[in-house]
Amino acid sequence: MANHTLEGNRLEAIPRQPVSHRALIGAVEGTLADFLAAQIAALDAVDPALGGFTRTARDLVMAGGKRIRPTFAYWGWRGVVGTTEPVEAVLPALAALELMHTFALVHDDVMDRSATRRGRPTAHRLFAAQHGDQFGDSAAVLVGDLCLVWADQLLARTAAPPAVLVEVRARYDRMRIEAIAGQYLDVLGETDPASWSVERALLVARHKTASYTVQWPLAFGLALACAGRTDLDEAYQVYGLAVGEAFQLRDDLLGVYGDPAVTGKPAGDDLRTGKPTTLLMMARRMATEAQLDELAVAGVARQAEIIAATGAPARVEEMIRERVREGVAAITDSPVRADARTALVELAAAASHRPA
Image (cartoon, rainbow, N blue to C red):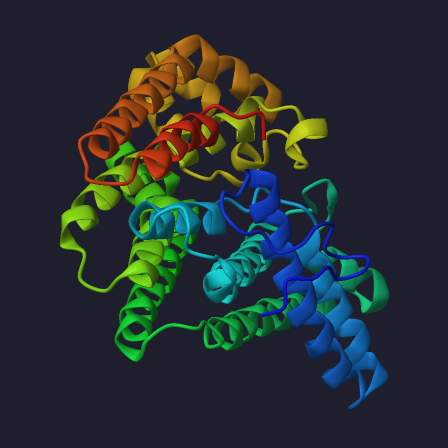
């Protein structure tokens, strides 16, 4: 791959090592921009309406975000290969994770009837503004589907030996299956939140978020580096699950108490939809009978006050700290390279203590 800039999309050359976080994100976004430009041109040639459809998909992919999944995958890879290996060969694989993430977000927003994402209208709202709600939902589902196909196409461009690609694909597929399984459990929980529990909420967090945010991106990066490195696999798995759960627990808190101007989403959405998050399940476990009765009938603002009064937010904060400690301990005691260990320790803190 040429080491050049893409006007309007890539702010700097695709990096050689060492790579800063900013340079890595720029490289991933440049790879996405190159790929998506070609996809748009191909469909635009079929029908201008398809060009508009794919431009909307592109805008959703490129609309900011933390790019946390390719970042974890990068450090999973870098933890094995060292500081001199150029990143260009694995950029398609890293960028593919963002396309998969967009698929998950777009479908999740349809299911949750979310109005905004990253401070902008969600996909189904954008399309609904054109031709109504039914069209909006249908077009958004198709955008998500298209992003998942694009992720497969981009992943296939990764330059690696066949044995490595087989293992990478196996971990990628496992990541997708677990994310869909977790999403189903999340939807199921909303149908009967009274029968849910803290333990089941954590199971949802483990599959819906932890597995495809941290655990499997790390394992995916490890597979990109070298098939069969079992010495790091266990450490990455322990770290990934622990930090991934901490990430979701922080999301639970932000969903109730976060600043919409920072999170890009309305406060209280989880309470409004009755989503049985770990925070809500913990509040029910810790609440008095009077608090339980009021939670069942209160509005969103009052529910947030009652949850705070139970002490559940403080308990969830402690759960976050426990998981970060577990993840950091696993990576500290592992044979990962020193620069990757430092980065992963920093990422554990950043993922679990963030404003959005």
